[in-house]
Image: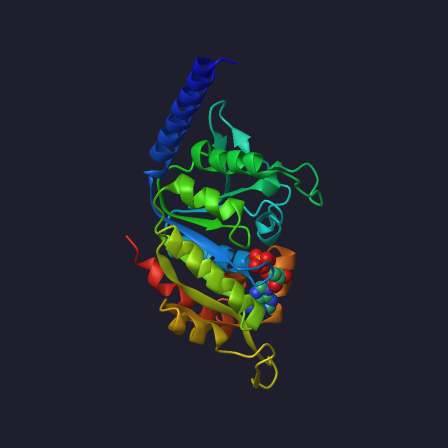
Amino acid sequence: MTEQTSQTQQQNMERQMEIEQQQIRQRMIQIKNKILILSGKGGVGKSTVSVNLAISLALAGKKVGLLDIDIHGPSIPKVLNLEDAKIGSNGQDILPVEMTNNLKVMSIGFLLQGKDLAVIWRGPRKYHMIKQFLRDVQWGDLDFLIIDSPPGTGDEPLSIVQLLENCTGAIIVTTPQEVALSDVRKGITFCRNLNVNILGVIENMSGFVCPKCGHKTDIFKSGGGEKMAEEMNVPFLGKIPIDPAIVEACDSGKPYIQEYKESRTALAFKQSILQFMDLK
Ligand code: ADP
């Protein structure tokens, strides 16, 4: 290959990327707020927070999209009892699953043949998939797009931040244990390096309130997330206790915040995410 040919190829590639980025911009301009839900490691409740935030906003009458790009563990279809849902197409765009008339859901899980299949993809394929979710899904006009990112600070969170160009900000979910906290510091640094506004930290699984006697036990300690948020100078949004009903709700595909509206945990959820209701 001559030097000139490779230069032309490079230019064509760059032109193609710019066209695609422009298509993403056109789609994303219809969405007022794009909120990333991040965590330093898996299993801390990132998807639980994503779902309950999306449902709360939808119940408050906002137009909401929930995008699950947790490519290696897409749990949103299960949590919302949408495992058998099929996404459609109008020949040009991918049509998301409409849970209600103001809540649209898109997950890599909808594209997998079997629900127990794992996705083994390298970086470029993951990047392409995320690009498709932003560019080709017919989100329409939305007040909020809640994005459930994979844990950590690897390829996927990086791709989505770059492709979105400007997101409203990120919510970082952690648990009170030290390991999760040191991981979350990396998440904060990640956001700062990429100029992503940190909306705040949520400390999940923060103590257990006995449903019978109301006594609170700090199984994984409590308050670490708050302390860390203060040290790192980021807003602290609140503590969500361990609640067996959350596991039950997630397993049976019933959105917790809808099923247990009046519970102490639902109240804690609502307080943590209250301020996002007013984002214009
Ligand atoms: P992640 O998205 O960070 O991997 P998930 O949201 O999938 O984590 O949560 C992992 C598991 O923990 C799920 O079974 C979920 O039901 C449970 N869980 C999350 N938050 C709580 C909580 N506050 N109390 C009890 N169980 C919880």
